[in-house]
Image (cartoon, rainbow, N blue to C red):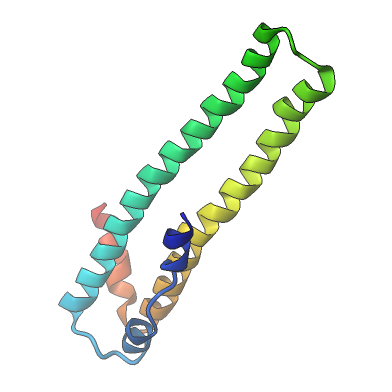
Amino acid sequence: MIYSIGITSLDKEIKDGLLCNRYKEDEVRSIYHQYLELKKQRYKGFKTAGMTLVVVFVLMPLLAIFSGRANIIFLIVQLFLLPIFALLCLGLAYYFMFGMFSQQLRKAMKVHYGHIIEEMDHQK
């Protein structure tokens, strides 16, 4: 996951090329199409990781209850504090994996290639 977050920022050459109108429209469509495919792949992985966390957080208190070692403080931590912390971490990871890259790409494309963004978004 660290690797995914590390490669999430837009390449400086591509960003400069988009801002300076160096690419043909077909090349820009290809870049945006690759971004959409990457987004779809990462979203599937992110969804799987989220579902895994939900299953783990549901099973942990149940295992503690059925094992006979259920402590009230332990259950409160597992039922409330850990899911809140996990949601904050997932939200931050979501922003770094999707939001930041999307924001950089759209900002670079908006100047000269805004019509391509609209066209590709309507094709979804």
